[in-house]
Image (cartoon, rainbow, N blue to C red; front, side, top):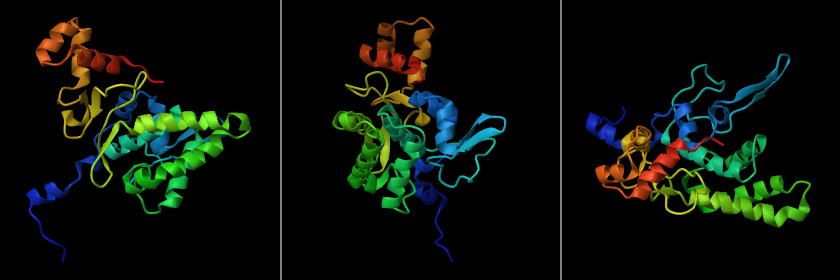
Length: 248
């Protein structure tokens, strides 16, 4: 017979980071990528026309999702959106399409049984070497004279994205800062399941960036919003810029 626990203890043991909460549209807005890209990464897609269609298989299916993409995709978890953040790094570094899947599959082969191949201890301790080797082979095909430079650029971009992820003692993410604009400097906007219902908020607060941006669009000045929320003008401006940033 299984262990009997109280409802309070059951809730305490739940990892809210694994609980579904985000639509594909929300993930796309938060990471500034097209929703079609997010759907393809998690659920796959069909492309082409008429008799010449092909199926793009999902790269990182949500845990427990069916093999075939559902008509109405399920919600995604914080771990899912954190994984997509890492995929965004690879994509920005010049690796796309099926090559993204090849990298993830390389990690799965290296660390079988890992439900989140782009997260967890193995990825943060050794997985980045696997990624750099696999990406290096893909980026340098046919262009050996650019090998060093292209791989160096890729590694710098990946490190920039990884530096925006805060992890716990088990090396699992509990918060990350989406990369937008140059992606350099202080991370003002973060996604943390413990604040704002998991929506992007101003770092160190529970104030949703979209609320600030909405008030700004309504005509309120940066100075007035800074006084109202007791934030720096820079934090207010970063929240507005983040929400207004377009998908790449």
